[in-house]
Length: 363
Image (cartoon, rainbow, N blue to C red):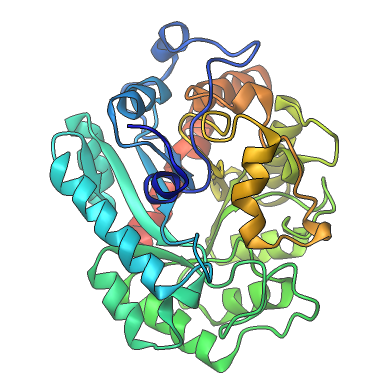
């Protein structure tokens, strides 16, 4: 199936597929033996093509589960209608590919997918504007299988302020109601794009741990999409988990970030709060960015609808060369071994920590 903007949005979380292997990246047949057959690898924000080539990439990746974003594109972006449309698309995928896909509603679905050799997909939103300012829609979307909601994208909404908003108002009364209802139902509260005050408010009012599903450390890159040490400490103090993105311009302010620049974010979180609170949230699809966006123009043609402010430093290329491949988790694992991380700690980072919090929240 050819990749169009529409199929990109429907079939992937944020990015689409990569072309070939980056220089220095090992092939799947060289690295597959390094993954413990019992390990569950989880990408806290990713995407995947649902076709023959996409399933081949999934097999190469070693990844058991992704959370993928529904309904971002359109006019306006992040609308109720777009969410319903993409839900219908994914329910179609699950129905047609029962032999390959598992819809994650509970943590045990992830374990079952691993045991059955299938690929688990959790459905989520990157903006609560999909709720259309109606608290009842939290239940509506939960019943349709949504299990993770990011409270804001980059801008202000009815719940609170995004990280690029001029003034961070903090969590609104409606935002508190939404968080509490999500707690009651068993949904993951995601604060990756939220402003500082909104993030800290949500951590405080949530009755269960929250996540930064895909973010990076501001101590290493002073980008408004990155989280400060204070936010990371408070997340961890409540039992939360932070997924580290592989996005070039969130990892560093260099023209091209490296694999070691990426690993430095994992190391920083481990030093700051311990290995139990860091995970992977690549913010790219299984295959990588370049298959859908082979040129800078193609990248901007799609992403300009989201109106990123200059402070977010969004730029081409969005990828780190060594990680823009299906085998990115294998590449990360190898470098963590080189850095002296133990096998059990690597297993936590690549999936164990995410699975732990999914068990606690989803049941």
